[in-house]
Length: 194
Image (cartoon, rainbow, N blue to C red; front, side, top):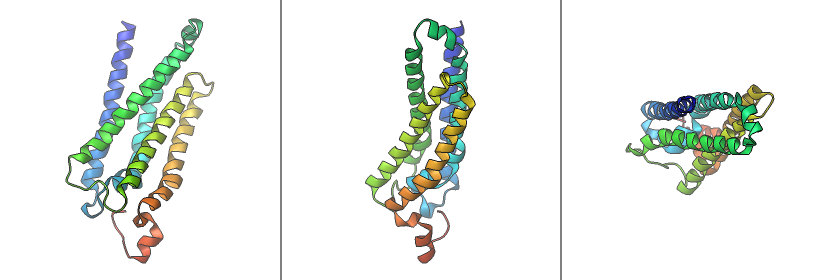
């Protein structure tokens, strides 16, 4: 009975994570400017995904980690600790894929171009790098299963996510297209939508 309740909770969290991605995608598509609408601008340049949606997924996933942490003693006695960590990493991967599906798939049903301002190959690499960084941070959170200060790990993951978005991803976006450089936009009098 308890295992069934845990399974239902895992499925419910997966559904909520999908809804977070889906609602975020719909909001980004509805509020985005048609002149600047493209995947990298909507999902990588704007702050909504990294500032709000991904930390919400971190919190939901970490709640699951802390739930499993309560049975850590029983798992360790049975020498199944590595197996449990592997299951949690698989769960993190599934949650990441569910979130990415909810976030990116609705954009494909619009008439907007995928890559409008830059090289599509570099754009795809940027998106894959963003998803990889998100997955690695979810895997980092799995460490909270054994760590003695679990909430510090959650704070670290959120801070690393924000540092990646604001300092690394923003600079890499300039390689995709100079339009994402503020100085370039000021010189060429390109405002609004970026």
